[in-house]
Length: 450
Ligand code: TRP
Image (cartoon, rainbow, N blue to C red; front, side, top):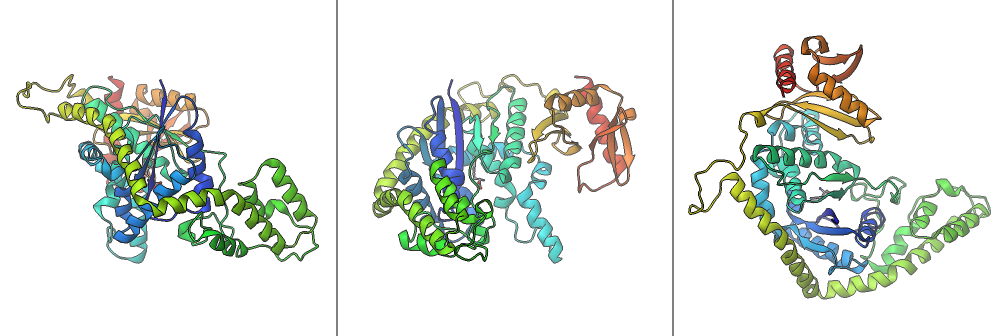
């Protein structure tokens, strides 16, 4: 069976060179691999969370769609659509919302960051926080689970969202007694280029240091390249290519042989002005043909619209049957169709149990959590290099006497096995430590019985 690769692009900005090299180019390349079914979509519902400027959202949808098509996305081969053209996605989002623990959402990084900022400012912790921001990960889970994606290529900042999608999927499958959803794997592209921006920090809209991909044409490209910071070495002086942002940018768009030539020129003392001109010309040569297609597409939005509509039809052919099944699963059934029989294979009491969930953290380490039946996080493990070791400790926590393993430590508690702390109370949890410890004991005891 083919691997389903799915990713979404939030439509709030204009694609820049960093987006292209870091996300768009590798995604388009991956979509041409044999055995891959790619789903790419414009996350325009997600855009509304961050942006209440309708003109900007509308423009960004157009620019992003045109960009993906212009750089060579084969829309016949992949499924390319807009999130907001698939009504099954918000429908699924609601079903998932109803099984998602609020406690888990409280721990979402994006939400926590807003709360932390508010607390630092001394205002209400939820000041300016919308339900959209708070439930962002549930909508993202719906995007992914709707199409039973196997792999989801995302940036590191999205790892937690993938973990949450897996957790929500597991919970739904468990509650409704069948594997309706595939558990998605996060795919972090380790060797794609992270480009430096004009100031040398990672190129990002939030640092305002981007180089446009197509917008503004050759002129804007050149003007940006001329603003890239360099050191103060004069023409004639040898340059250190490795530490030069110009070289990093060049390399992301060149063959090894081409990069070697540029490197040698820098080491031989090419002046920064000439180096910038060379970088600009090199980029322009590669981008110009794609830009031409982009400009043409932007001038013919009807063509893009048709492609996206066809993409939506294709996507809905997948989404609709699954959604129908899910409606039946949760009891939203046609009254003629035996509506009163219970869950398909309900296992009501057991499914409410506590559980361990394993995951990889943003350094690639293997960790696990113990969650209470209601999703509250009770323990967070240390980081392990070996997944087997993490699995083994998880089983030992389950089988050994909770009283021997659990220890009160400071404000919280820890789980200790063979004298080593293997897990701790999660950070930032409040409330009576003794009461929480009782919950941990109960959770471990219920697991030991399974
Ligand atoms: N949250 C993602 C981002 O900001 C965009 C996104 C929305 C997404 N839904 C998705 C990515 C589903 C992958 C899968 O980058």
